[in-house]
Length: 390
Ligand code: MG
Image (cartoon, rainbow, N blue to C red; front, side, top):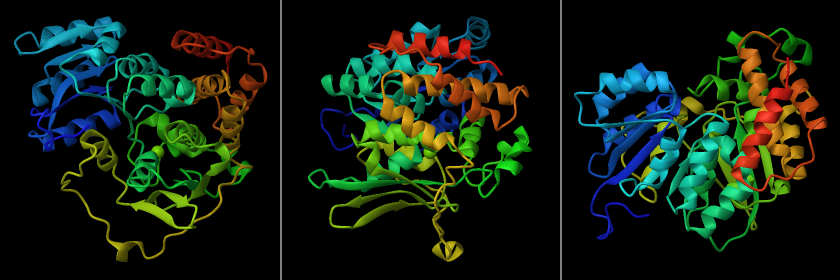
């Protein structure tokens, strides 16, 4: 996992960016282009955003483009006919690129359960996996981490909170951790009462106070489900029991998370809220490369504040703790119900406060199955989504 300082690895680290047209994916391409000597864009892949994929292929010159949806594939294939690039179609191709010899690291920025199969294929062949797709670890964390360990595949966090914890843990491998403290901005509705929350609109939910992210994660931030998903992610990534993972609301989003050690010392990672930093840290790990963006000006942040999350107004957070403690298929059911509920909310079919109600119902009526492999998880996800109605 060295770059630039290892004789065996003379070429730049070749990256496959899955989900390149989303918010994280576009920022990843920008970061990779900053360091042509060390990082190389080998693959870009997207579900159906043909126009942006074509633009990215022409601008960044990857060697391979993957389009999942066939209609979009035809458009991309034709538009890139004159370019020196291979264009592949379908979900299977998305998984195949995770095993290619021409790829040194997979960055998964796919949104939702669609990230599960490619992530599994990557770790099962020992491919380093930088993971921005939360659902993979939320749904199948045990299986993914066990498989990664068996095949010596490093799993590198990209989510800002987990990157912060990962950075705080550097050099501490022999020192037991007392507590992980995951910070939360509190989302668009911090401080709202239950009654106020009844009235909010999609437009309100899409206004994140600090971070620039895609719509799904911004809505999850507003419901605090995002923090719940991140607690589960942290449990798997850092092999940490739930009792040792705390959530702390920190509205300025300057401290991106913290680690408390057995001597009471707390390490925090701070920075301007900009996803390009955690993306680059994962892609270039273990190196820190220059990043020519805004620096933290402490005089502008003279008042860093902290508060407890309101678990009563935002019940999704505790639902995530309980689903993870229950284990088996419950995190998968919770995630599927949330994905479907967020979709219904975005389509104007339900109210914001229906999201936790729908998830609660789905968990209460979940089948008691224990998924054993990726296909079991995907079947449970589909079954749950078909069961969930507005
Ligand atoms: Mg996050």
